Length: 249
Image (cartoon, rainbow, N blue to C red):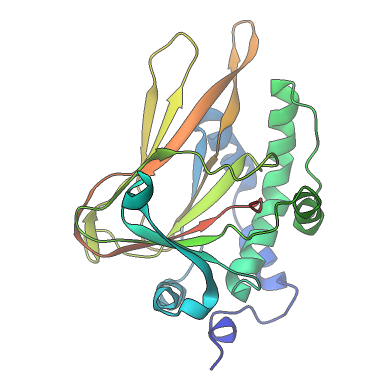
């Protein structure tokens, strides 16, 4: 069986993905993104879907490259970038999530005084990426074993970058692995940095700011700089899928 079918959506245009994404309380998600730089979407994927996506890691035909973090100073662990076409489930969710998140991305640009507007549809944004020479897909599947961790970083792959991305935990904490918490840090001007540790269960997704986000201060909006990473895995095997909405050079 073609694994893109086994974890696929029932229709090629991803209507099921749009329906699934639309079921969440988006005003509450926007409030959390504005307030904390991140928002959790519980049970975006089912347990079976998590297992099926994790199993793809061993099937090299789905990926364009394989990265060992220690070789690049990124931490310890490894990940693989998917190639096009993406598995239909992930491709459908990428399209549906972008459509929702573009609204707050445009609001953030306005508040930070950044010129530019993100189109409503993901296909149009990808056309902009490809016209700018960013043609390589960025969704990725990460694998951690005991002792692995991911240093704080920002996933910027070119001049065009969507300001929010999504990570979905595919393994169950306390059962499949221990440790390995998702960590977000926020550098504020002339203030100490703030850390956010995001508790996730299997199938939960976290949407978070990639680089900058606006914060309302007493004299108007100011920018804060964010980085994300994963703390040390203490035991077991941890898989995560990352959905990045811009493509790479």
